[in-house]
Length: 321
Image (cartoon, rainbow, N blue to C red; front, side, top):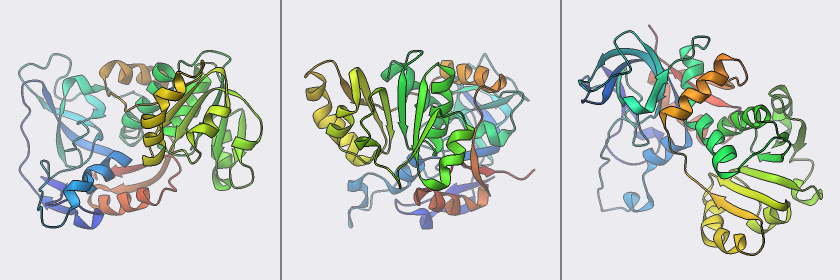
């Protein structure tokens, strides 16, 4: 089979579309014939490796040569312990954060897969898992969103952000989306009640208070976010080195100084949330926003585009029949 592989840590320039052996599913795994995949910031991190992996002279080699997490396709075979799926089933999910997904055939754990929504194409389904689960868990589990809450979503036009706006609306919140001028129409089209164009106004200086702030790659200090919260408000940082470091180093301390909570998290991919999202997708209550589509063989180009930071929604890879 063909797959996107690398032999060392680095940039998308290290990737090759090469012939590799077709994997066999372990006891709890499902072998999937890939129909589509999507690229995520975590793929760029896995590709680059941690800083110590890039120190000259160490010659660290990646444990997994194939990268990629989000997948959608048809079940080809199942491991001996798999109970929920059989050959021919259409599924979506992730392989795991370590990768292995950008290949014509992919093995994934049964518990990280769900039946593909019948009304979605494989491309749409592949756009969902990591971004939508991150948005869902950030709002529901960490942000404790409630009907009527005023919610600010910074970075509302990216992969996580476009799902966050829609999920927050479905959960009954009043949503303010923050994005650039070119993305204002997208934010409105997916249901945002209010849209702030950060190129024209600094939302941190508008005097508004929010019950929940979801900062996807936020660009303000943790102290500015804290000032924007209501008395019992919660700030959740998603992505971005500086916001996560601030939340890690200062979040717990600031959370003890009153009722406002400051935190960050890393999503935990699970089947229960995939099934919940499937129900929303089938009811057309949330819709994947796809910016660009690339062939699997052009994964390096797709990752370069994602790294520029201007994607509107998701970037998807397709596998020609």
